[in-house]
Image 1 (cartoon, one colour):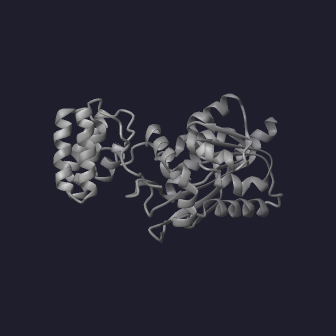
Image 2 (cartoon, rainbow, N blue to C red):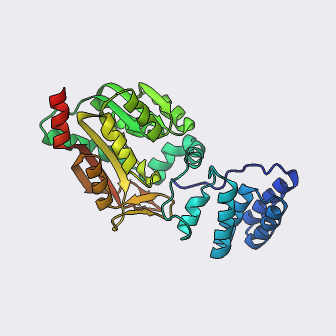
Image 3 (tube, rainbow, N blue to C red):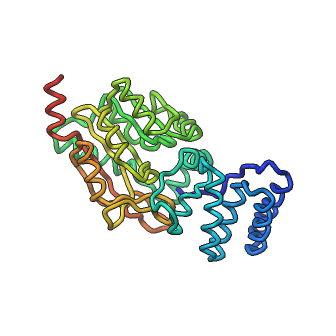
Length: 325
C-alpha cells in the first residue's frame, strides 16, 4: 500500500493555508511550475509549514528537479518531528540521508487510517493479494510434515489490519485469536469481521513488550504483509521469540530482493533479502521450517517478489524450555 498524498496540517496562518490549496488546484490542472512557485512563496511566508514543504518537494520531484525536491523534503522533515508526511522516506528514495529510515508511527497510522474503509477491496480486487492463503498453506505443510494436527490453542496476528489473516487462520485456532494494529480505523474494520477475541490498537513492538512483561505466550504468531513497513526486523524477531510457545510457529510474508540486506523500494515499502532474514532468525534463536519465494501481491499488474516464511524455536531453545517445564 502506498501513500495517498500529504496530510494537511494547518500552518496556523489563514493566508498561507489558502495559498497551499491554491497551489494544489494549479497542480491538479497540470500547472506544476505555477504550483511550485506558489508553494515557494507560501513557505517564505510561513517557514515552518511542513505540509507545504512536502507538497513542494513532491511537485519538484515531478518536475525532475531532484536537488530542489531534496531541499524541500529536508525542510518538511525538519518542520515535522513526527514525520506525519513521510519526508524521511522520500529523502531515502531520492538517495539522500539514511537509506532505510524507520517509518514513524504517526506516518504509518495516518496511512492506514486513510485506507481502512477501502483496504480489503484494494488488496483483493486491484493487487490480487494472496498472503493469508499462502501462509495458511505453509503452516499446514509444516504441521503436516511434523505429523501434528493443524490446530493451535492461541494465535497472535501482528499488524492485523482489517482482519484478512484472522479470517484465513480462524478455523485452525481452537481458543483465542488476538489482533494488534497501529491504526484504530483498521482495528475497527477487523472488529466487524467477528473473528478476533481481542483487538488492541498499538504498535507491534510495544504490544510484544507488554506480552513479555505479562509472560503471555502464543502457539502461532502471524504477520501478513506487515514487515514491508519495518526496516529492521531483528528487534521484532527477538520479541516474538519471547512470546512464542516452545513448540509454536512464527509465520509471515515479506517482499524481497536479490541482495542480502534491506532495501527501500520505489513503492516506499521495504524488501528484505533472504540472507538478512536468515541471519535475523539465527540471532533470535529461530530455526527456519519453511521459506519459499512466492509473489504475495501484484503491483501495477506485475507480481512482486516475496517470501513466505515459517519458523520455529531452535531445537536447543525448545529442549531447554521443555526440560524447564
